[in-house]
Image 1 (spheres, rainbow, N blue to C red):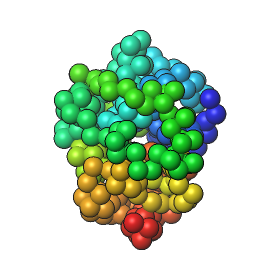
Image 2: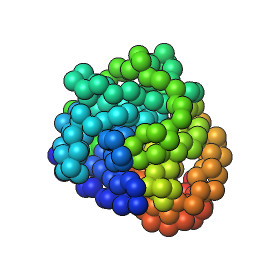
Image 3: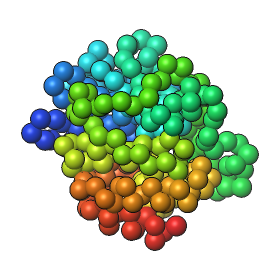
Length: 248
């Protein structure tokens, strides 16, 4: 599987944005091991292992995985990895029930029907269905976020509800990088737009609340955007948010 790895090197941590054609995840390396942030679709489990190998780590070094949110393209790979490796998975307290699949808040065949005829959407669906996009599996032992400071990479949670009710971004690379999940992306297979943008209402539980939550991202000092979809983007988060909101 083709993947691109962008590396952010700090004084005490190293952070990697792993980008694929369908979704991204993040590897934060620090003293004592690795923290994963998201894990792709179920079919990406092998790619996550390969990405760890490429950055000089191993799955046995995973100390924890953090979810930006519990959609199948961010949770699915972690479920597969947990079948063989032992590590805790954490989500914002408001997202835990979603990760456990006590409810499911994501696009489905009915909501996608109005756009499914579009060529870009058809190509995207042909990619993600073989990766396990139709899976409804969850993780019953997902735990709520607590103090993250002891985790490798020392991520800092930035709650951003809207895309899902418990969506959460994370500051990494000693505050220089922002893992934005799907609250703020820089590209997607179904659109020709490039640069900071929001996913449309088909994919977002509460678009207005998501837009309001972007203020929390704009208020950070991060200058590197590590999105859930699209390429690494460099610039102020205030600029990124303003651009995304102007495209709504």
